[in-house]
Image (cartoon, rainbow, N blue to C red; front, side, top):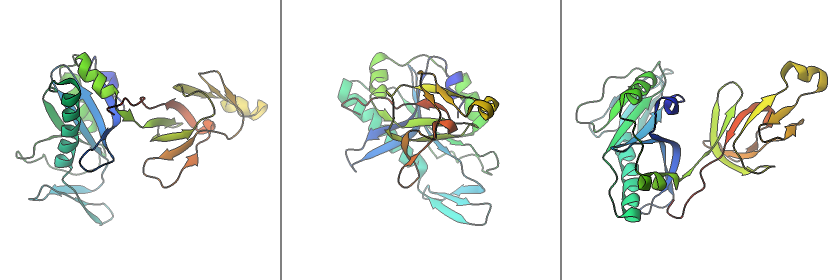
Length: 243
């Protein structure tokens, strides 16, 4: 869903926002929120392989290409609940309701086999291209200032964009410089002569295998990711008191 922000116009697009859950404790993550003046989209992305069907209880039954199977939770109800948590918090904070919402599922693996969702499922579903086309066509007016403030007050993951296009999300636990978003250029073939060098857009030059210490989502523990492997770093939003 990398192209979403490019086609979203004045809509507010946030990825990986983490909202408090007062009922069950901890935080819940919403893959993407798209907010306009008239609606909010709560987007759940799945990169499943194989195929899936939906049971009578609303659970998603996946058959993988390797023959394995997985019974997932009702991801529509789960995403609805996370959206309700966000809207309830906004209403408590501002004493005004959030605009109507939609739950959107995006299945980003082009090889996944799936049928349209049944009419009774309260969600929309797209492949990645279909999702981008839907965003292009939707009303993209900006959200009101109070909703924007609420949404920007939630924490997000730090994003590390690696050379080659892969993106890692997680918490940057240690960083050797002031935490400012940056792009990173590498010496490339010239490094064979003068030695490898990575230059940050914030001015620092790195000539060794140092880098930020990161707890990556989905991985156990933490690890150093060398600056030499990174193309861009985007730090999370600072969290407000309600986030």
